[in-house]
Length: 172
Image 1: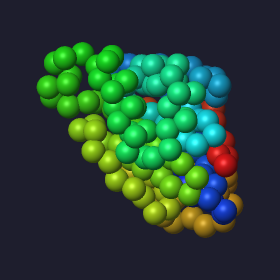
Image 2: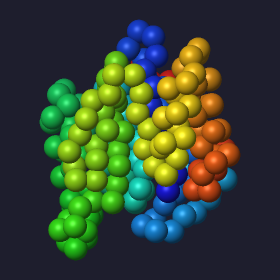
Image 3: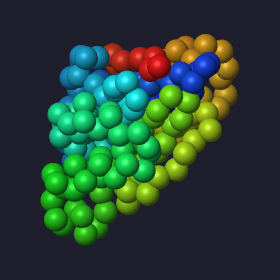
Image 4: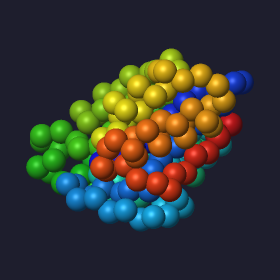
């Protein structure tokens, strides 16, 4: 429940945006605060979480260590190991209820609930607002920040689990 968006910009920049809803399993909390976001970033990597946002906390606490990893497989493996530490055993057996968007300069990846991943050429969206956000990004052109904001606004207009205010940041 929520939405996170990642879009490639010029010169290897990546723009990420998120709404201000936080999900805890099947419940939803609207914080009304754009500083309470699901985006964590450093010098080399960024991550946004849709789904069980509690899993982002151990990653955020260890992000300075994770940010030093030089390859995507090493970074992804370390993130997955941290998720497994806090993931209840029954959830491990049936799959993880989480979707992550990971980025590095010029690259965007989506990590699915079964912990497999896909690299996306231009943009990725996760959360209950995914379909509306994807449609918005597909049908718009222009400045990256404006496109991310349009996708977030579209999702907040048509999906009950996506609410403003939004946080948008340019990475790299």
